[in-house]
Length: 404
Image 1 (tube, rainbow, N blue to C red):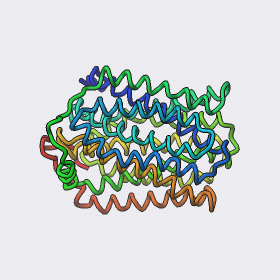
Image 2: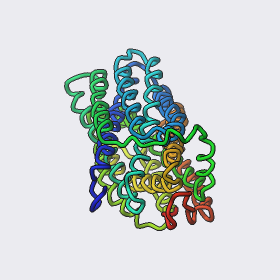
Image 3: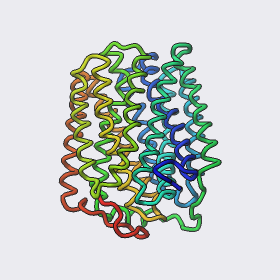
Image 4: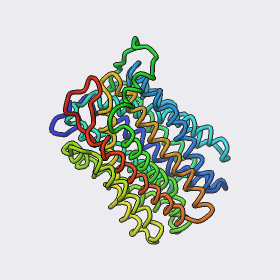
């Protein structure tokens, strides 16, 4: 139960699992581009590595959500942390770029399962009127992981090399394993059959489905591109040391995390989520367009710290809408769709815009990414003019569920 907006016994293990998993992933996101650079790889290789992870995660997210409904969320989280830990050790052991693609694919299997299971477990544990705040706490836990991961990695790099830092971060998956095994409910309905098409069709018919998918795609294209190339941008364009790049990412994570609880309250109070989604994507697009025109550590860090809360609130709004697209028996499938779209955007952004950066420079790549975000925000505005005006609750949801 959630009281006075604070985590309770049913939600705390979910938050601990999420924070630990995302701390480990943040270490990977920080160190892998630097490791590829160290091994002689180029920016295209970095983009493709991120894409392998996200494409694999996107492919598994929907079936993982279905399996979470059928067999329970705990089993999916345990699968995610086991595959994540093995892949983290494998990435650290690689001495060339080629094996890293295999380990990124293994990590993607776990990433897709974790995203669907954690979000659907939280939606099951928290009443609808408080879901925005609960999503705020969940994403705060994730952002604390994003803060702790790069910060710890930056400190570790003062004493050990990239390989050791990456390998040691697998311990974080062990923390997530313990929390999931003890505190996340099993649940599920093993007798429900194997028909994925029916629940998916019911969700797809809900008003607002297409527009919220486009909004999520826009947000993740922006976020994925910036996070994939920010470390290399710091080295090649800004000439920053590795540790200082880690601190930049950590400061961004602090701003991201601090905005989650007030952002969740704002989402709970908003009758319509569409303006939040459109405004956040537009604002972050403009920030990315401005980024390559700034050269100092503090200017870039300030831009990131000021703009990321807007995108953070956008993600909370989107996650609440996806949860409300389904009833209790199909919430895992809905969050599986969420995960699939999210990982498609996270993978497509670095692959497409990284190629532009490699051939035409960072300014061209970031500008193209920003323009794409603005176009997708406009598409959401057009789609929601009618379909997104009011969300029709799926079977099993009470009347008056929040619209978009």
